[in-house]
Amino acid sequence: MRALVYTGTQLSEIRNLPAPVCDQGQVVVDLAFCGICGSDMHAWHGHDERRVPPLVLGHEAVGVANDGPLQGKRVAINPLMTCGACASCVSGNEHLCEKRELIGMREPGAFAEKVAIKAQNLVTLPDDLSFVEAALAEPLACSVHAVRLATQHADHDQAATIAILGGGAIGLLAGKVFLAYGYHNIWIAEPNPLRRSMLEQLDNFNAYDPTKYTQCPKGVDMIIDAVGSGATRGTASAMVRPGGVIVHIGLQDNLDGLDSRRITLQEITFKGTYCYRNDDFAEALRLLHNNTISGSGWVDVRPLADGPKAFHDIHNGAAPPKIILDIS
Picture 1 (cartoon, one colour):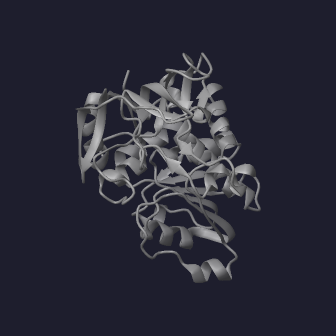
Picture 2: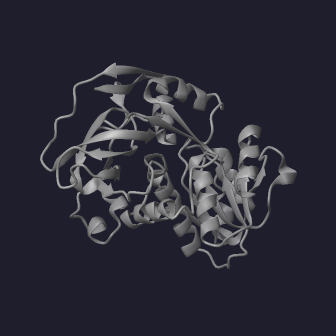
């Protein structure tokens, strides 16, 4: 089968690999589309010791079940593999499972024509939801979970001021989720002028250049840090109002930046998040299915063969917030 293989720092290539062999309880999915995630970029940059090349990355995937109870069905893959038996899993917090794994990390991922995964990780798609839109379910689930965390910890109404640091896929989708839930005073920090212009045109977000201090909102009720750098943690610490909320979903670096003194003195809530619950994934598919959220205007679909170039385009800032690879 054809696969896009991460071969080393900032290197990838198309290879022919053997088709996957299923372990007990697994099924094979014939893949149709798979999105490039920020975590795939993190690995491609050589910043994730868990993802050791050569490795097939990719986990934002959809396709058709080749066998098992959903054979022949169009499915989205929930790539989080959990034990199903620990206290976190039993309580509905599967994303906190101590044995949590992700395809495309230690197991082969979905930048390939086929992938093997447990049948329980497949979600049947509505007939009228396109594969391309459904491929946004996994990153959208991350954003749904981040927004739910922000709103459950905040004392405000829907007139709250919201700042999202980073206008990539997760940040953009978080903005769209806030809009879907009735919030409108949404600011998105994005240094790339082309992406910033796109954000303004999409949903009339208040997109601003974070390098220009005079443009930055002040006294913010809720902040989503979708970058996760020392610089953005410092910015979030300074922007948030007393009693406000910072949700940290980016993983760019582990440098200093967080103002723990101000967080302590001003009773600011700081909440980390990495992925999502199963009900967040279901909510993501609901929002996509009823067209509350879509990829129109900010998603680029490219053939799998263009995968190596797509990684470089993202690296060089010459790509929209999301590139989805067409594997079919």
